[in-house]
Amino acid sequence: MIWFNWKHVASALLILATTIWSIRITNFDLSKIRALTNMVDFLSNWFPLNLEVVPRMLEASLVTLGMAFLGSFLGLLIALPLSLLAAKNTAGRFYKGTRILLSFFRSIPEIVLGLMFLTVVGPGPFAATLAIIFHNASVLSKLIGELIEAADKGQQEAMKAVGAPTITRALFGIFPQIWPNVLSHYFYRFEVAVRTSLILGLVGGGGIGQQLFVHFKTFQYSTVAVDVLIIMVIVIAVDFLGSRVRQDVM
Amino acid sequence: MLCKDELITITDGTVTYGRTESAAIEGVSLTFSRGEFVCVLGKTGAGKSTLIRTLNGLEPLSKGTVSYQNQSYDRLDDEGLRRIRRNMGMIFQQHQLIPRLSVLQNVYTGLFGYHSTFQNVLGLFSKEEKLKAQEVLEQVELLPFQNQRADQLSGGQKQRVGIARALVQSPYVFLGDEPVASLDPGTADRIFLLIKQIHEEQKLLTIVNVHSVKLALRYATRIVALKDGRVVFDDVPEKFTEEIENDLYER
Image (tube, rainbow over all chains, first blue to last red; front, side, top):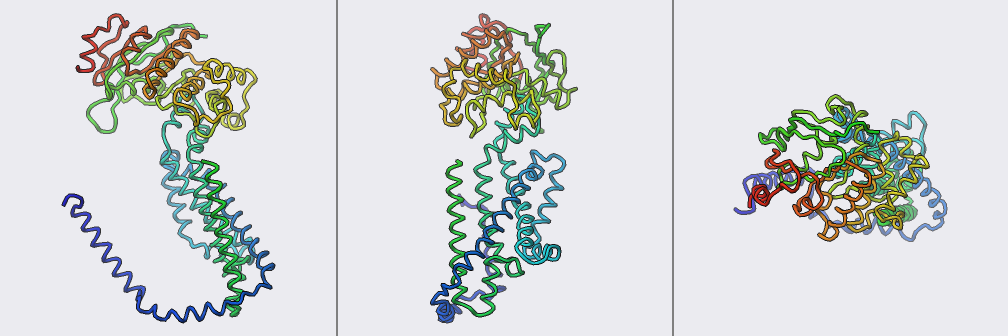
């Protein structure tokens, strides 16, 4: 065995066992897909599209976009300073505490956060936005913290060598080099926030997510179809915007 | 102004990394004075880079002391070290410019040692400092490029920006950690000459690592040679014989 050792074999067996276990526990059975006609039947109810609702749904989708943008952007603003406390090389003795706190916050599902904020500010986009800010601040702090840890030491040393004060060192020795990656993470989180805000619609978070939920529950499938199409367009548009900005920033 | 010529002293300097037995530099004692142009020679891994980096405290000593104008680094806090570092311009092999910033902005980063983070971020530099930035760019012949992004320049030009950044500090000391090692021979020559010219104009203390013995012999006023972390030669270039050179590089 030139390329593999016993550790590789053991890992392969472990992965195989996990796969088999997961297939059993999820009732994963490809033969059931024969009932594909059911889905065709379901989807056929979506047409013709209920185009009347388009203006109203576009309005709702603007609320969704607003929630997603504000949630991820304010999350980023909180995360930027916090990430310095979440990176081994800049946090010093705060590192462990911050990391534990952040993973605790990240472990709270967004929908639970939404329900919690809802009890404070009542149902609607505001509660959903708060949940998205909270979640993204903790996710982005961790991600940017890892970028800071992997940042090239040379520029930080150069800033040290000119006698720059500590915070100046971080701002100029670290952030310029990781900036494209920070934006890349940010736009991905923006895209995720769009999808999160849809889920938060389930608990009265407003926006097109809530519309989708209501239409689905009331069997208005031709309206559901319009909702889904608009959502797809938003997600693709955000992704496109993100890659454009990243290109320009490189 | 300086009243003494002795600037940097390292006494019994030893640096060990991690738990390894062998030291990067061991028992190094040297005194550097104003006006000297010191070239540090030695094979790869001989401790040249470590030595240079101990001189401005980038690399702390495991044993011994380094001092600048009789202020020992181990007794200084972060603020005290800052005050010392801003008197020393450092030039790196990979220039270590800040990406995404323009040539002029990179030169301004050399002023960071004299200001608070608040002033640095808002770019609150004095009129004299701004003039100084223009002046040093003129000196390294990059004035026409001042608004170009530094990461788009050639290797030699980037190193000139690195020199300008060090110069704008109005330093007493120039430290160079292999400043010409990544450049082609012609460019390396020109950059080295530029460093020497600045050294003479400003009457600095310059300490530079080099691979090229030829460059060292041509420009240095003093050669320090390291072998396995120890000083094996410390004298004027005239006394650096071929025999010593062969022994140093084990040829």
